[in-house]
Length: 395
Image (cartoon, rainbow, N blue to C red; front, top):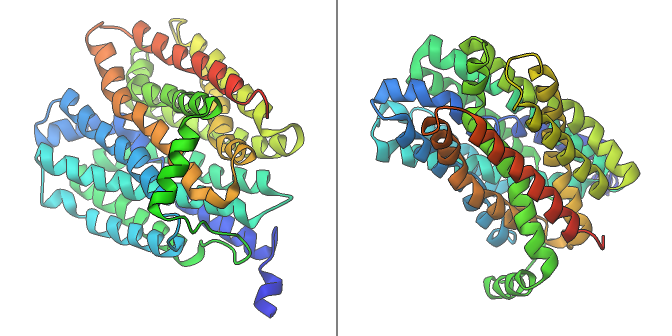
């Protein structure tokens, strides 16, 4: 009875779960989205061309989004705590893996497994933590995505320093070992609350549900819109460091500038949760995409004079859209299928993730400039705004 009274919505226990979830979130997006920094050190260490390596990192993003998304859809009947612990153990095995392989196939396996473990932690934490809250759900979601933004801010320069100072193998071992600790901690603490209903649907019932869902116009528009709402950042991550360096920044300064996008996003990850509780997640989400679109447009301006404003607006847009898409989806679909909904739309994001790193890298390499890459990034946000607005017009 004492435990039941303590375990209630918006309680101290709820905030403990959210805080630990935020720590785990630091190591989910942060490493996969640092692939632009991996490219040259890994190419030098293993003698593999940057374009081939971009394919390896595309596989990592594919498993991060699509593989983990499928686990979210079809693993919704299983205990979240057990799955999180398995992810922690998987990263423990991967930490020393580069001492045993350096081939394209070996690196593909390592990064595919890392993407799957990181993505699964993301899906579970992002879908479970909001279930612990009622009146403060937006703020709590903002908290866990602060961890996500902190990872985008901190890990790119940390990876840069680790790979430069300690080498590829030792740097990878150190950072993935810390990742392991964070994931295991989440596995110990983060689970669904006892009052939250959990789906008991069988695999056949899930397939039937997916077929019904896929036939609706709302789902079709949202599936495309959510994919594009993340595709622009996946594109940007492929060339941003090179773009900033071409504008006159040092290699370290360019990495720091890219990380600063994630740092600025922390502001909107905190504020957007409170804003969504006030004006609604739809308006706040669309406003975030508009901010990102304006920031990307400023990247067309040569030189460094407009870069600070562009980074600030892109960071605000990234933080708001990354934080609010789950509350937005939960207003449209039943929260009982929490991990299934988050996992399903992770699949949408993963479809674009497979193509964006090679597309971003190739568009710069074969045009000898950044205009085409920036144009594709701008187009992704613009079309994303339209499809999300149309898909949620009745919400």
